[in-house]
Image (cartoon, rainbow, N blue to C red; front, side, top):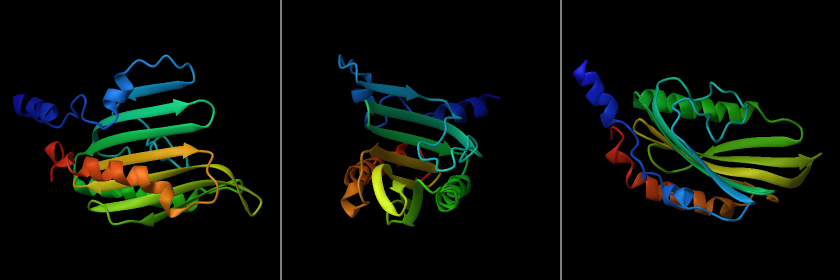
Amino acid sequence: MMPALLLAVAVAIPGNFLLYEQAAATKDKNPETSWTAGSKRTAALVVNPCEKAGLGQSGRTQARTLIYTAVPDYSKSEQVILYASAAAAGKALRDLGAAARSCSRSGYRYSAVTVDLGDQALKVTGQAYQGKKVGVGGERAIVTRRANALILYTVAGEWGKPRKDDFGQQTRDTKRMLAKICTIADC
């Protein structure tokens, strides 16, 4: 019993580990902005094209999620999830890619392409459409696996046509997290 307890403590995501935890803890007097923070192991993926509660849940051991919302049309999120194994984290990433390919609808489409970050990574684009024309609204995310950890950074807002530079902040944040994730992941 004692070794299992020690293992559970060893893989916990420590407080202030995420990049935006200090910003999330700072009181903001602006009524149009807010942060939510949570450590529910079963939290939904912050990138979830099919909006399925079970996406990426299998094999999870820990999760930490931060979401910033600015009314009415901007949000960003940071999520770090630890899995029991690299294989379980890899399956979660593959399942997310499959969801991006299969869960588009006529007014909102997703795409996912691989990028060279961590052990595996996807650049996920969600985009509103009006008929065949790009509409206003969408999300841009980088989802990266390093060993048994998934790292997710998203930005959503009034996007126009998807562009390569829409992913700049998410890529920079991912690189910063990759530099420290092995202190809690099984790298």
